[in-house]
Length: 103
Image 1 (cartoon, rainbow, N blue to C red):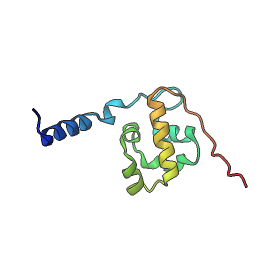
Image 2 (image 1 turned 180 degrees about the horizontal axis):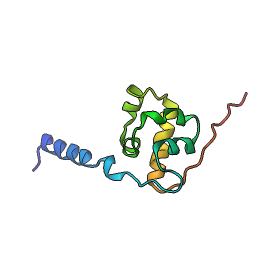
Image 3 (image 1 turned 60 degrees about the vertical axis):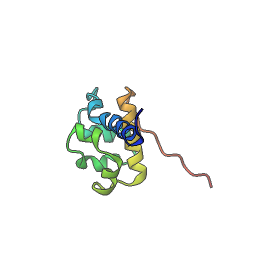
């Protein structure tokens, strides 16, 4: 029978074994570099293109690093992360406009 500490370490190990680095998609179509990706998704995300030096860094940088080190605002950060995941799943990039608040 497994002790609680051993079970916990096994679970943590399984979570740590799954890395985003193994799940980096290849650039496709007109999207060749991070600047192209951020321009295609819109909402002013292209202003942060210089912070992602490589394609790998775009797909491996976590939310905390984007916030603390890159200074990307919450809305844009969440938008980039969601499009990053959709791109991994094969969805073509399009700009989604922000909804306007009703008065």
